[in-house]
Each structure stands twice: as C-alpha cells, then as structure tokens.
Image (cartoon, rainbow, N blue to C red; front, side):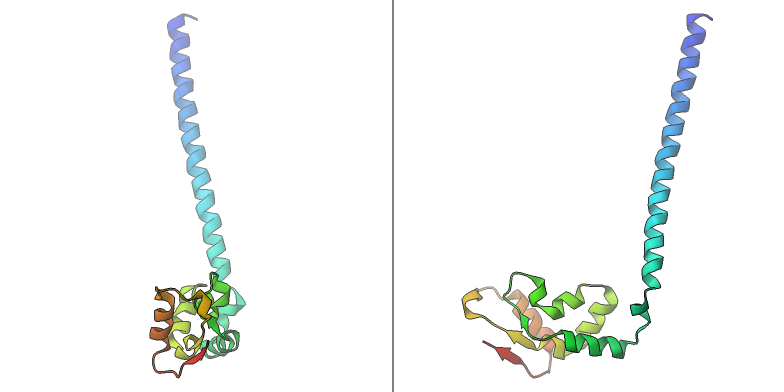
Length: 133
C-alpha cells in the first residue's frame, strides 16, 4: 500500500470513529431520558397518589402542628415542608388556610424582615390565628 492509501484508510477510520462516538453519546442520552421517564411513571403509580384529597388534607392537618416561621430549617415549618413536595400537595396545602394559621414566634429569632411570616399570614386568610410567642 502507498502512503496515500494508508492516509485515506486512516481518514475513513477517523470518520467512522467519530460517527460511532456520536452514536454512543446519542444512545447514552436516550438511555438517561428513558430512565427518567421510567422514574416518572413509577411515581405516578405510587399508592399515595390514589388517596383522595380529603384524606390527604386530613393527614396534612395532623402533620401540621406549629410552624416556627423564624427557624432556619424547613422541618420546623410543616406547612411549608408539605407544600414543597409536589404541585398537588402544594395546591392542597395552600387551599387549607388552617395549616398556615398555627405560628410559633421565638422573639430572640425575630428579625426586621418577615417574608415567611407574611407568607403564612397571607395563606392563613380568614382562619383564626394560633400564635405562640
């Protein structure tokens, strides 16, 4: 073989390698998308999704005791914690003003900026406030 023929074969090999690498990347991306889709489908089949809204709201009611709106972690604010799980839970939690009306305030934690406190007041709407200081 001449050098020109070897160069031509090398170029063909390089093109084929590039094509195969592109195919591998495409298949890896497709694999990742299918895994994500499978995860979504599994979550849709979760038994908790079959519970009626009324049952979910009752569970939320018992799970939401006092909301420490000046705490540094969301675990101290059960209404916020529940509403951050998914869109359905957020909509259900926001529809129940009583969940947002039980507020604990520790005076040593109070700052001049109350965005979470104002959020809770707004979402509590006409429910009587249960405030512990």
